[in-house]
Amino acid sequence: MASKDSIAKTITVATLLCVVCSVIVSTAAVLLKPAQVANKELDFKRNILSAAGMLEQGVKIEEQFKAVDVKIVDLSTGQFTDSSAVGDLARYDQVKAAKDPSLSSPVEDDIAKIGKREKYAKVYIAQSSDGKEIVVLPVRGYGLWGTLYGFLAVEGDMNTVVGLGFYDHKETPGLGGEVDNPRWKAIWPGKKLFDDQGNISIAIIKGTVDSAAAGSQYKVDGLSGATLTTRGVHNLIHFWLGEEGYGPFIANMKKGKA
Ligand SMILES: Cc1cc2nc3c(=O)[nH]c(=O)nc-3n(C[C@H](O)[C@H](O)[C@H](O)COP(=O)(O)O)c2cc1C
Image (cartoon, rainbow, N blue to C red; front, side, top):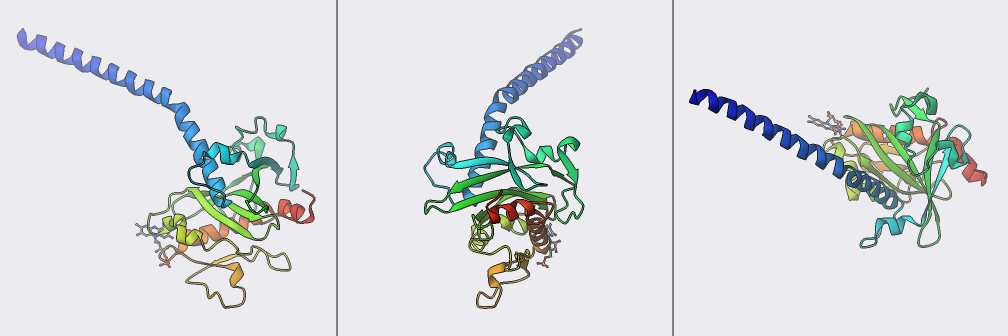
């Protein structure tokens, strides 16, 4: 009898413990959700400012982000469009939109391996401390292990790179993960995206660029031991600069008619 009692008690205590623990975990998940969303948003903004070369240590991100104008671009026409096209501007997520058939279309020449491309992109426009216009374009594309998500920042000429950075990827630390290495990121500013005829000319090459060689302004060192990630980054940049990406928008901006 005594042993039966103890089994029943053990089961009761174990069940109660499970219920109490699951209530604590669920409550924590629900309570922490808003903080997680806010942190993700801050990190997103931090990455935009970083690509634009505007990130200042010790100043609140929200404060710094006030200098950034958020606009919606219709990628087919390359024109700025009223933000009502995407509903709530602050909440519009173009990566999510790309998964919605009513807000996206299949990519024809899918060199970035993204499958579908959103109709509307959110672009970020800011003024640098020396008064230059900076346009930050969200970009994404497949590396070796998954999709890299980031920002390409360019000057108002839509040709000179200000910075490139990724806020999310699955590449291996020390190999493809070197896309986050500040030394590699420091190679990008000043590089040119298009040649004089307007062809996309930026290229990530295998090895190290000879800075004295002709055309070095279009070339970026590849990451050693990470040829596949490097190719992915090269391809995603080419996709987003092309006709199915920001090509029409870039052309309009160059003419001052976006
Ligand atoms: C565990 C493991 C992780 C790897 N991660 C990456 C990676 O993140 N990006 C990449 O391009 N190559 C990665 N590679 C290497 C690729 O398989 C391939 O060998 C490499 O891209 C070739 O680059 P290389 O021509 O510069 O040597 C990884 C290999 C192994 C075994």
